Image (tube, rainbow over all chains, first blue to last red):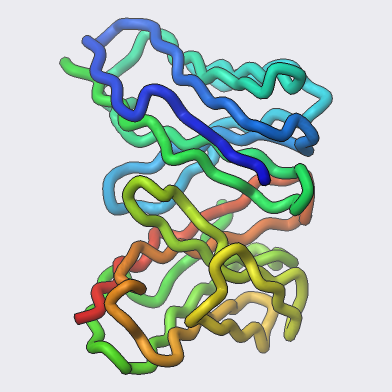
Length: 112
Length: 113
């Protein structure tokens, strides 16, 4: 059964710092991996999607990497801003069920 | 822009009531999904649909049913609400079953008393 783990559960950094969020998964047979952002009480917004054949994707200050063989992904946020404060979720599609399986998220607080 | 809307942001119901949660998407997406989100458990898939009148069980379908009579609308039904169904309910849709991202609605926070 696919399991997705995100560490740390919560992170607080000062504005301007570069940071890395981690995601690990147990079954490497995935179609893709996605990173989402969720603001308090709101739905999810897709940030980046990495197909299984890709190693990384970039969007603005965000860079996501994927290492299928080791079952790991990282989301790198450059020059963090208070507006980046949110919960970040990773999700993998594939494995035995081909469903989207979510991690429990990392709550990020960027202090001004 | 893709838009996924949910009928209510907040809902309070009593134990035993029948509850309808509605989701509408405006992008002609084939696929629609219902999740619930609980602290420490993350998002869990309740039901999904790959076509009109088609439905498949997700990981936690017990106590729920769904209806998809039109392509743009996917309804989640709690036949007899219970307190353990108090949760945040999120609807999502996508065009492609395997490759594309899912677009999420704003969520419905349901409290069952």
